[in-house]
Image 1 (cartoon, helix red, strand yellow):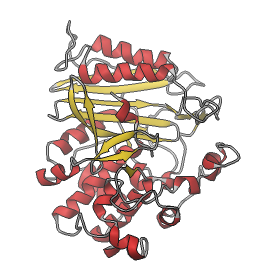
Image 2 (cartoon, rainbow, N blue to C red):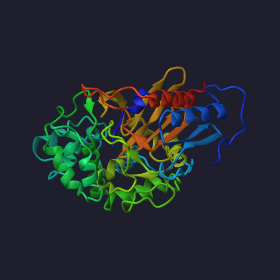
Image 3 (cartoon, rainbow, N blue to C red):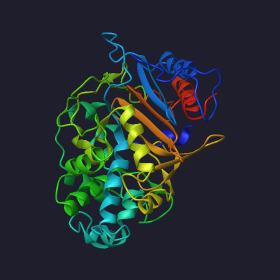
Image 4 (tube, one colour):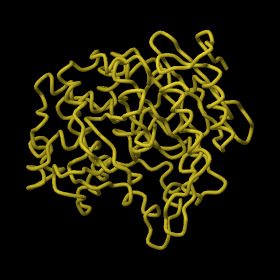
Length: 392
């Protein structure tokens, strides 16, 4: 659902033998596990990760999948990966660009005139949808009105819509009819899930099949991802953690939203995957095995975008660009849905990778002015990311 934490980044464990030092071209399994444990001790119920450095692989987990039963979390569990889905959608659109079915700089009104009518449809291009410079507003405050209530935000909409089956066109209409965040193509862009619902409709029109089927056949299967899929109902089919939403302290104790109808965000944030599959996906993508090198170069052209947490990020076509001092340039995405957060980043050369999954989100409480307050989890996560991407 959201993006932006990447901009701040910076039962079996240790697939490779431990080493005495930890550098940007290696890792220390004990230090990684310690950093993972620190995230759990800071207040995260459960966290798990996979780190890759060339041929070396480390997988770890810390904490619980279920706070009520104490069931331990495992590194191979399924997870709702949120807006990481956007990289899959962007890659699918680029495949259609390669085949000449979509013009990257063509107006969206040429394809979907009923959904984006008039002058806006003529000005907003496909590229602007992918990189969030369309000026189209976020539909979420209208689909989940209690989150933006002037009388005070509450989780009521989360509970009301747990089993709601939203239609893509009704959510698109909410975003298109809302006040624009800027002129098409203006800088900085503003992150909006409305863009990716439109891309889902575009993909279905030109490919002649559902978004879910196209992504499955042309992205997931092509990359050899064995545990990645769009959910076919509110439940997850396979071992997974409970997913706890704190909503900035409005839900205390945090509530489990692991059972949820994902139609509210499916084209842009609905995928279920594992940390191992995510690393494999980004490895294949950045190696030019899912889209060609020309498309990959387009995906790496970034613009400044205001993320949902208010931070400015460097955003390409479904990819974040994250500069990590002393470690290099990383590409990937983060993802957050109700109760679940995931981060996946791969270094520019493809050799260093990190995917991390957590089962508590929006843990920072708000101060009286509405600003999220620091939490020990923040520092612990920063240390984990530093270890995973750079070593000590």
